[in-house]
Image 1: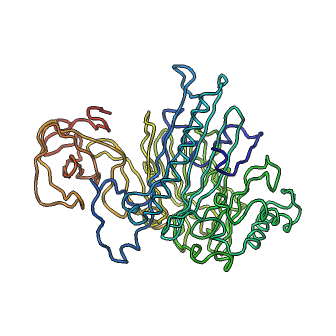
Image 2 (image 1 turned 180 degrees about the horizontal axis):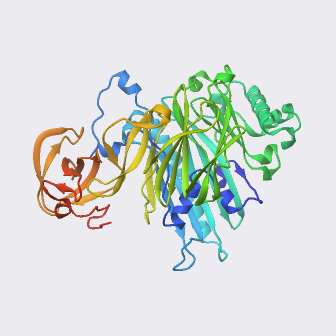
Image 3 (image 1 turned 90 degrees about the horizontal axis):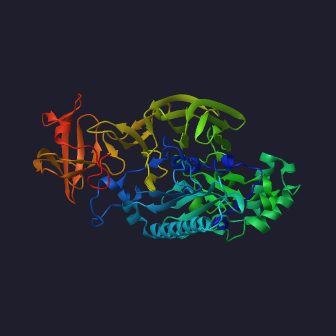
Length: 544
């Protein structure tokens, strides 16, 4: 599996440093600490709550079709093996993700949907095979072997779908990690190689060599001049057919260079970025027009992020680091160019996202602690991280899956549709989210009144209930009432968290129950707990 990505061995790196790769600490922490939960980004509409079954594709105008952007459903899988019964920490962990387009966007980008399925299934099979191979080997006492794979969506528009892939492993052969990227043509689904993006490979290598010398100095590399470094990159790294060493975001290209080729192998991974606007003529115009406003999922330390936060036409270096041990951070450090801004916020895990609106750039930190979720907002526009506010109980997050082996979330790059999840108390305690956009000082403003319920959450009717009937496709009220039969299982769909909750019953019936928010909550004039059983998840009769 490690051969699928540029690999960098580092004998001096300890386990905590090695696995500090964006969401990787989250995947491991959720298996080793009951308080941990998944923290991720969500963007775009959740098609799962509208469509009860596949519908014929409707005719659309060109304008409507143009507004549809690729939206990916990311599924997480994890396996853990414990050496002894009763062990609280596993000896072997495998945690990986798969990518697939949502049903709605998959119909618009059929070839891309097929390519992502093939890509994901191939790498998932490799991860599963590596896990089994590790279990068949001799595992030392008190060992922690792991293999993790995490994707960060970098661009999702009508021309390009691109992401970075971060891989880490520790087994009987030692420790290693690698980072690579993938770029697909959104229309054809074809995976693009460097020759599709770059018009002049020699000039491209010159620019990357100059970037590396400017950022790290000549003493860092095996080659003492930019000309010799450029030649090495041209001959050994960036061939025309290279397809796993770069990713595209809306504004530029980022490359991932294994250190063993251009520097001593223990130096780790090198990243370099170029802006399309600064290198006009170097890139294919079809794929590299400046994308303007966008939301960008950020990589966590030890990886860095390059983007223009102050709109001066140059790249800024942004690094997000958890301070302390993975799973027990004392705070988060925001490194922006030469400045460092430490924010004290004890947490078990965190994720970060940057949003460029076209005039401002905001940083969003989604953190989870034993006290719950928090969303911290910073303005980066003036070249420094200025704290502007936060919201308690809200984050880009999913509920703790507990012993479940998989979870899923939606990701995209539309800054006008940022998915934020909050805790609900409408006829039960659960999490639900809604799309938002940046408002004043970057604070997120909801696009809708309603929240869409995250995951499978159910209530069952203890007796017959009067409910309002909804259109099963649009979820609009029909002005009709229906009777929900005793014993019916009702899947929560959405709520305003003030006065009503919408449910799906069976394949084609959707209803709305209005409730009184004053405790104890009531439905149809009766106490809710006398009419409805506790929230049920997945299997009928399994009460949480």
